[in-house]
Length: 242
Image 1 (cartoon, rainbow, N blue to C red):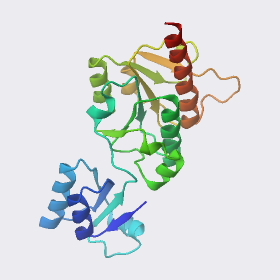
Image 2 (cartoon, rainbow, N blue to C red):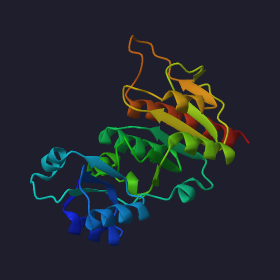
Image 3 (tube, rainbow, N blue to C red):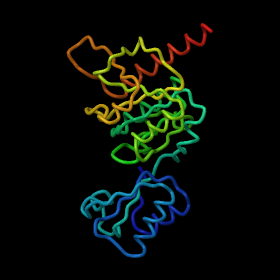
């Protein structure tokens, strides 16, 4: 992941519309130049987080960071409206934090025929170099958009006719028996946490993957692969039968 250290490099990157995953600003830092960073970040929808100076120093490897660090993104994020327009399947990630998992899901979603992936701006992995490597080229073909709030995004998708399918071990529908309605949004939760309660409540159908062993759940990228290809198989068969 590219790291930009200091006010001037970050300001210039923002002015040049360089894709940035997020900007870290030291707590207590202020002044006109810091405000300029915040304003430019807001204009470009780049998330800003306020962290302790010690955290910035550890990340930068120096104390001369001027209270500002930017983490570069591997690619530019797509626009939400464009990435979901005319989509048959959208994959929504409710806070996946491991970049290897995010990359693997992007790769699998592209292979299964998804139209785009939606991720939250905060408390989730962004499009870093690690994600790009794990995606094995799929980032060049599958749009990934950031959204401010997952619950509001699901409400918006519903208004646009999407059916929302949440993957949850407490689901009532087996993944290989679901009758998928189109367009569809498949929602996957964070590692070890699953779907947040409010996100779960926004789902039309909760889908489970039946387990034969004593482990209750799977790694999120593995679960994504199973469900996405179940969707692909079922919808492909349905189209062939018509």
